[in-house]
Length: 503
Image 1 (spheres, helix red, strand yellow):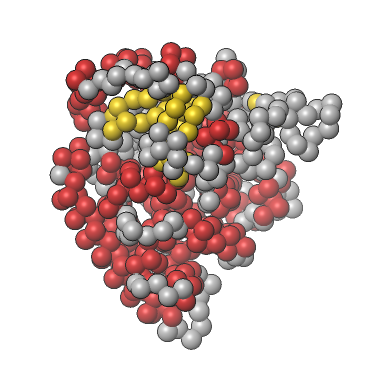
Image 2: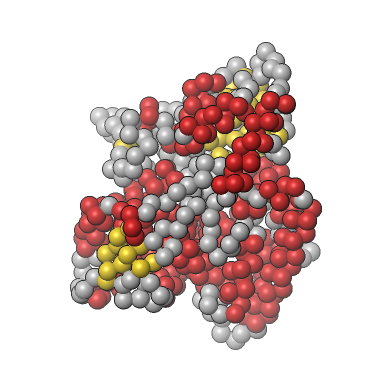
């Protein structure tokens, strides 16, 4: 597979996987007890997948109910929780263990398989970045650097917008975390190494499962080299008399070392790797999809530009083109935020996995402790009873009912007369509308959501103020029906035609 162009699993491998699923379902059907969830036939699953992969979990919910079980080759038995009926129960249940699911799914493909959760530390990194006055400038600098590349400079043709957005977000992450330029020798090596540790890609490769031990050895060798590079960077930066504003590597290592960890650089690697993937895979794909949608829809592009002119009205000419929005100005870009949320709703086929720490019952079904449980976000986001008859269409102006954790309908802050009126998906505090799971909900939401929103808004704002965008040859992204994590990474190259705006 070409590491320089992030793509989904090849069609031939997908066809082989479907055939494998079919045979597995015929040979290893499970008997059903009185309170066991209904078994989803893999034959039926494949039929639904082939009919419309986007709504496969909607159809499973219709046929089997909100709780069901399916046997997946190489993963084993997965208990499915589906739709709005169970979204609150899944996300508030303390018995569902996020880190055990991560460990079971990724195993020895992480830098430190025995490490405790890095979520609290990653949340601290994110909060520090959100308060860092230099970070928006770093993001803007990397966007401007991208606009000087072939295809972007003075307007032209971008051959693969997803690949370019991957490079952009990687450059931002390396700059902010390690104070490393993406085009430097160290930056290019780190980028190549990070791409080789992409767990989503590894899990989609048949060779990973056929010879797991070999795949683990190869990945761990990559981590050894990454650790050595980080140690070299730390030694250089910690010895500097004047520390850079990008002292996150030093800051993280020193905090870890102060905790008495046996190998603080290994822990630092684990945290930086975790942040990179939390801030890389979904962010770059969402950013690229947004540019594609803007290029595909001139009316949407015009509305977004009107919002930019309104929010940044104090700037004129090239100052308007190059202005870096403040936090307040970013918060006022409400249409751009709705476009972002609506895009994720439609392009994120993710299943959130947890492992049960104790027995769990729901809807007259029992799930035993130790089971792997998955909640399908599309089973909520494509539900026509929530999102209307046009649930599969892109509409950033759509409104939905606000559902609180306890199942009550309506914004907690709304008055009695308006409490139950539908609202935009972005209304209310992040992670609190249980009809909207674009950045996660409950006990394990996306810890980097606010940073991702800020980063994406700055990038889109700068790009659309510089260019008119058109979709090259009217080619829209094609997606794989076997991707069930993250945001869709297309199987084809999608290009853009750019025309520089004149100021």
